[in-house]
Amino acid sequence: MADIIQLLPDNIANQIAAGEVIQRPGSAVKELLENAVDAGATEIRLIISDAGKNLVQVIDNGKGMSETDARMSFERHATSKIKVIDDLFHIKTMGFRGEALASIAAVAQVELKTRRAEDELGTFIEIENSTVVKQEPCAFSVGTSISMKNLFFNVPARRNFLKSNAAETRHIIDEFIRVAMSFPHIFFSMTSNGQDVFHLEKGNLKQRVTQILGNSYNAKLVNVKEDTDYMNIYGFVGKPDTAKKTRGDQYLFVNNRFIKSAYLNHAVNTCFDNLVAKDSFPSYVLYIDLDPSQIDINVHPTKQEIKFEDEKIIYAFVQAAVKHALAQFSIAPSLDFSLNAEIQQLDAVSNPFSEERQSSASTSNLFQSFTQKNQAHKIDPSERSELSHWKDFFVETDSRPLPTNRELSNDLLPELNTAKQSPFDNQELTCMQLHNSYIISSFKSGFILVHQQLAHERILYEKYSLMVHSKQMPTQKLLFPITLELAVADAILLEDLLPEITQLGYLIEHFGNNTFIIQGTPADIKQGNEKHSIELLLEQFKHFTSEMKFSKREKLVRCMARQQSIKTGQLLGTTEMKALINDLFECNTPNVTPAGNPTYIEYKQDYIERMFER
Image (tube, rainbow, N blue to C red; front, side):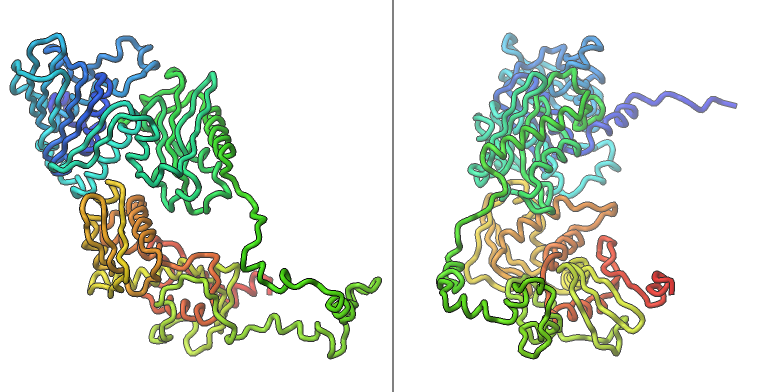
């Protein structure tokens, strides 16, 4: 019987290996930018076309390469950073694995131009499918230019798995920002399809952070700086009002390398306990410098996950540094002892407690019941007692005024429709709110406990789904249009989502660069916070998490339902609670949210009796 195990051909082995490093155009951008930084460049330019699928070009003014080095750089495991095994544990450069250029050459058409200062002519190399097609001298300025064209041209199946141009461009921008934020002393620029996206001049760290995150952060950053013998921590944390509903502007760097660490992220978040809402996340840009021998960065192909020799010490240092910075700048919960102007106008403050009033109060039955010796338990049974009507406090009436400060959508109060079957058919609803978050409602065979936010999310999801898939939701024009300025990545995302957002009832126009004009909002959404709603919608969309893949339209509908649903802790009137429950059982799937969480729990009478062993 013939042997069946054989070695893979080099071109197939290279393509398989490339899949670990080059997963999308953004992966190539990261590797090429890091190589440019390692080359000692002071100016780095990134040029992309068609979201990097057709072209990714990085031009730097670094030291360049000799003819031999230029050719060797495309060989697998070729690197100038590691000569002995100990070098692997003292890495101070960005690229060191020796796989980046080899991986790019395996899945794209690559052109390299490079020249050193001491050479009269540079070197031009053209590689396709890991094979050198052309190599010749050329005229070129000092530095290096690498062009990656037609990514995955020889692996069409992988090219088909790339996402939309807008999505791939966002990934490229993310990688660009992570490198540019690490090296503020280097000029960076980015051009997409001939249009300038970033132009980051050299400057200090705060200037670079505000250039990238936006000028609105300029006055909202708290400086963090702690130097110790073991490690140094520096950077910025945002004041509590910069917190977002999703993990947006959170950047952590170790030895100028962007990393992802849920453990250290928790260290920062705990410093903001009682400063930001529980469902919000603080903004921060923190840099950790420590001995390279204390970390292992060679645990993942993308080098975004690293291992610390003693993670607990790093956690404690980060937490202490952030807490010290917040305390130093008086960013802490405080009590406001100044009287509000409205409070000063109340009778209790403005009118003195005169002797006549004191006499009147001290002669009342209620006062005497609680001041006479050993009479604190005494209750006057007479009809004149102020306590005779104590039961009135617990009698629920529908005539009480509804709370004025609420953010319920108008669709929460429709006419009750009993067309569909529910536990309450032919029965008057009785409702009670618990902890301003849950609704208890009884029916003939038991009761249900409804989560008001999750229930409303299901109601809005089905309403928005119907609108966005059948007809456009009605729009309420704004009397005064609102200007919305976004970060570059968010502007690209919003432009990509405009058709779907228009279907949801928003009327937004692109005003050039990263500016948009909000002309109208969905008719059933409370007006007054349109800018925040759009920003939150984009944040939720960017960080949408699910094991299943959904279309842009489906993601938007789910994010919109989550955003506009009434929140836990919100007081509801009886009419509103009844309407919410009736609307819930009008839904096609009333028992779960779009994400699969239960909207209510049903307690039947026989189950309740079994609990009490009846």
